[in-house]
Image (cartoon, rainbow, N blue to C red; front, side):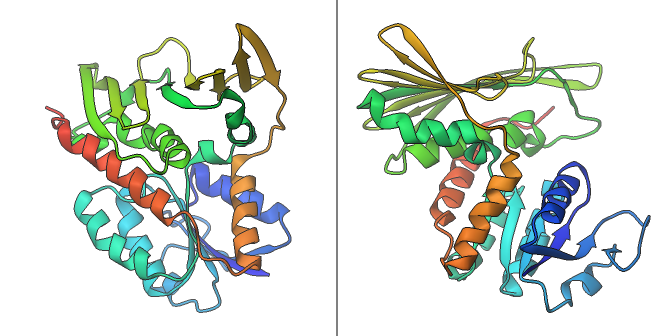
Length: 304
């Protein structure tokens, strides 16, 4: 039995809780939430009490990004396994500090880069050799809703900061040996206290060129990845029912994949590593994805 301490009980905290309840390998010992409602044997809003519980094996951090550093640091000090929502932290200084602790950790540390745990993406990875030598990739990510900014004047609160980890994680997962140079184009506007950001990121490597298009001002939701090889291309569409496609000689083959909650796949990966007493093989992926996210963010101007 894996004892879990869940941090955060919002949208994703509840998703984790629902998945954990269905899996007999896990037992939720305590949930740390901000709200004072439903404070009982399961819920607490007292951080000191929560982190004094000794029989927790795994911390799942599903709190807002601004609290990630504090909770991640506490979990690392307690020498526990960790699953955390993306992005890892919200400040570059926090990243440089926490990186040392993560490197020293001999525990499993996983980030929920959702796309990496969607079945259609896992199918795409298995089929990537069918298109042979890869020369480029294009990723288009966007959503319908504008982004509320209130009084925020912080470049790390721009919409891309929460969305770019997804395509970046895919790139870093597929092309581990690349050292990319970055260039970008950006347009943004504010209308009725809503922020619209259009961002193109170009990653140029020795073997491959990547283009990421992000916008929260698209007419339709998009979560598209197309990888171009010498013999066709593979296309993954996160919002398409059929999800994954192989294009070869102008012919499109649809790949059937199961609809499984990516959080379930993430928890299954954790269980496998836990059972086999493996250290997490995701540390370099965590570092590279976070590094490029901050490289891009540092080049952008703050919100005016």
